[in-house]
Length: 166
Image 1 (cartoon, rainbow, N blue to C red):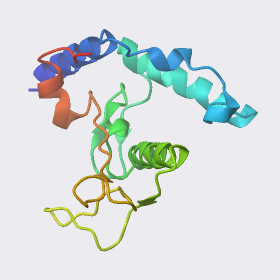
Image 2: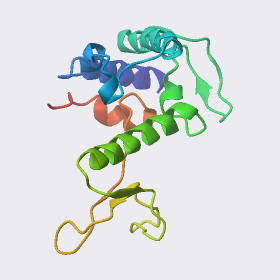
Image 3: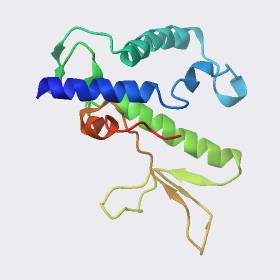
Image 4: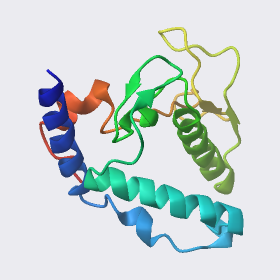
C-alpha cells in the first residue's frame, strides 16, 4: 500500500512539474505597483521556500521524518505540510488568494465584501466574498476560493492519472 501511494505521488509530482505554466512563478518581476516587490526578510524566506519547492519538484527529501502535531506521520519528503489542516501554510494560501480576488474587484471599481455574514452556501458554509452591486438578474456575484494541492493524499489518486491541462 505504501509503495503504491509513493509511486502515485511520484507520478503526480512528475505530471505536475511537466504541466504548462507550472514554473511561471519563477519569472515574476518585482513590480511594487502589483505588490510583487519583496523586502529583505521576505527574500530570505522566499529563497528558503524556493529550495523547499525545488526539493518537492525534484522529489528530494527536505526534512527528517517526524510526527505532525495533528497526529499524521510526516515522511522525509515533507508533503504532509502542504495540506495539513493544523498548519499555517494551507490557511495562508487560501487567505492570500481570497485577498487577490478582492483586490482585483477593488482595482476595477467593483465594491465587494470579503467573508460576508448572513450568506450561506447549500452546505452551511459562507462564501469567501460577494460583490455589493447586483451583477446579473439582480443577483450579486459570490466567490469561494479552493486551493487544491497536487500532492495531497486526498488528490494523489486523481492527479497521478493525467496531466493538468492548459
